[in-house]
Length: 270
Image (tube, rainbow, N blue to C red; front, side, top):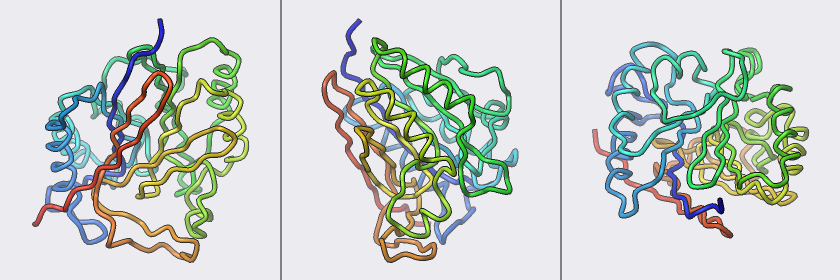
C-alpha cells in the first residue's frame, strides 16, 4: 500500500527531575515540558504520534520517571521513546507507556523496536553506551546488522529512524569530541546503504535544532524542550545558548517530500 501523508512531533531532552521545581542549566525543565505538551495538544493539525528521542529525565530515579510519566500521559497522540544517555531501557519500559510496537531484538539491555503508521516504517534504535563512555553513544553490532537487513529490503516501505545520539560530525569542536557515536562512520555507512527509502534519521542529545545531510541521508535534531547548547565552529567547550528558546519539531512526511517545521516557545515564568 502506498504511503500516505503522515505527521509527527519530534521532541527531545526534556530532563525531567524528581519535582516540578527541579532546575537544570538555570531553567525549570518540568514547566517547559508541560508547556510543550499543551502546545502539541492544541496544534491545528493533530500529529499521528509523538516521538521523544531521549533524556526523558536527568537521573534515572523513580520520582523523576513517575513525574515524566504523568506529564507525557497528557499528550493526546500515541507517544514513543528512545533511550538517552540519562535514561535506561529498563526504566523506560517500566515507567513510560508507548503506542503499539514490535521489538527488534530479544535483548532487554536495549530498547529497539519498530511500528508502522500510514504505510511508513518507524524504527527506534538504542545506542546508549556503557557509562564509562558517556556522553558518547555506541551503535551495537546487532543494530547495525538490522540496518543492513533494511538495506536488503529494497522494496520495503519508506523509513524513518530515531535514536538519541548524533551520527555525523557537527562542526562544533566540543560536540564532535564528546557527543556523537563512537562508531559513527560505520553507522552512517549502514544508513547510507538503505538508499532513498530512508526519509530521515531523527536524534536528540545536542540540544539544538540542526539538520545535516551526507550521502543522501538527512539527519535531523530537535531543540530541547527547555535549554539549548551553543554549537558554533568556535565552541571548544560546552556552553549554553541563552538566545535559543525551547522547542520541538513538527515533521510532515509526504509521499515524495519531507518538511520539518521548527517550533519554539517562551519559557514559562517560575
